[in-house]
Image 1 (cartoon, helix red, strand yellow):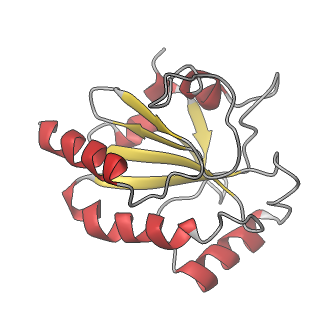
Image 2: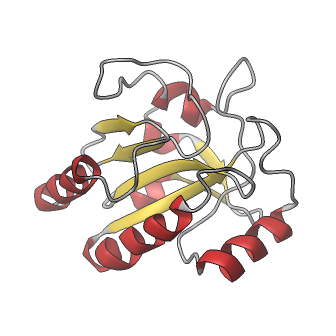
Amino acid sequence: MTIRDIPLTTIDGRPTSLADYADQVVLVVNVASKCGLTPQYTKLEELQKTYGQRGFTVLGFPCNQFAGQEPGSAEKIQEFCSTNFGVTFPLFEKTTVNGRRAHPLYQELTKTPDPDQQAGRVKWNFEKFIITPDNTVSRFRPTTQPDDPRIIATIESGLSRKV
């Protein structure tokens, strides 16, 4: 089984997997509504609008694992994202990203080192993983803004390699 085959569930309860995005560059990010980094939603949505037509998508995974910063129901999360940030990218069910109960997707993603060659646990909300169609994974820590030149370069590079 590859990372693309790991079962996922959308925020509205539909089963899916990353295989549904196999031909796209995806940015997987654990999100939260009550975090100091929540304003990153704006830049994530800007990435979605800028690159979406070229085969890119942000995939948001709400996470309540860090200081209870995503306490709402699926409906509340969707409403918050839509009303406050105009989010159009796909959201998934609440996900545990660290520990024994970490979702299998995050068990795989956290094996990837960041630019400082540090792998392991997700440090906080808004940690970012970019997966290209050839399954190359790049990792960026929470305080790295979505419009950071390294993230943009990784997205552009992945899009340029698409078949």
